[in-house]
Image (cartoon, rainbow, N blue to C red; front, side, top):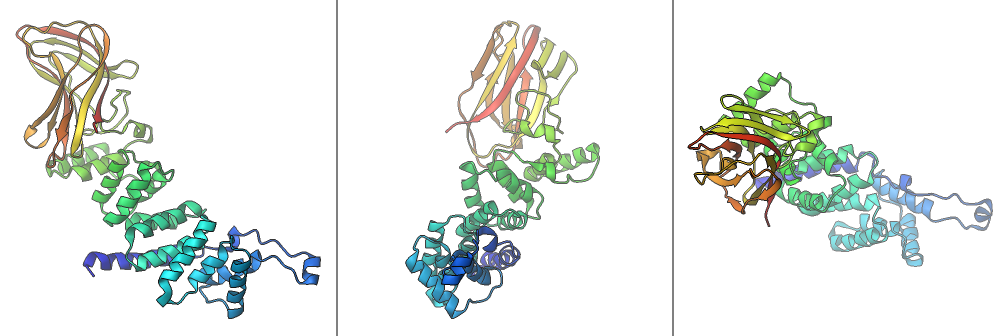
Length: 407
């Protein structure tokens, strides 16, 4: 067994103790437990649910083996009422270790009859953890968390096992299918002790959306935070820098997160470099006006960078898209006067350019697909005024800019 598997076994031992055996996996709270009527007690007829629930409680809560009489009763109910789930769980949980395949089949039958039976999911967690089946263990834990009213300890356990790639694969697959628990998981993960690179990976896989309002942000003034981000960028620790930046986001700015932050220029507050950094100076002014977008008034012939933002695109195919309205401007020397430019931070290697339409109409334009290769870990998106032979006046607004994934 590898060191990683040994770590997984120890982690599973902890989560089993923390999740399954702390009393939240109970049967009695899930059962109606109808009481026997006086006539029923007189003639010896009582409902089976209360006794089955008590037998299951003996296993799931008291951690004891039921009596032979109780096991015989459960077996009898399974024969007479084959659609009742609890007898199959009881049979699975009391099988000898040598009959593990039979026990798994019986537990599967219990879940087929009642997919909400938490003791059966808890049994599967223990069984698959002992078998080093990380993916199925994760799946069962998620089902337990969704079905449990007091699920915080379970989500904490799921956050911890996210350190395993197989667990992350299962979680990503469920999030991609639209899991309603995504925000709960990401919030718990963001506040956990799991390696920050793993937290970033999961945030990125969920579309860079992190519900961090319940996570206490790291201490420090805005200047301290800027210095921290600058240090991480200098060290090329882009993921750690981005994760810190995400956790410092005001709640009102979280909806602006994406491949491009605040790509609609609504003025969402955030620190650079993962937010817009506007350069005002010689030649004109640039400002974000939420009602109009990125407003630009520039005159001159020299080249200039008006706005920049650092983005973190994973290897893949993308395209630039923008929408703008500008007064008509001629293009004498063949170079577009105003362009969006995307380049790798390392080496400033260009990836793509997209000319902003300057013809007096409101236009949405899309550039050709381009490739981000492995090794280009961070990129800079810039809006540039290109140098010209004669001075030009650029006046208008960019309503949006986006980086879209291309299949």
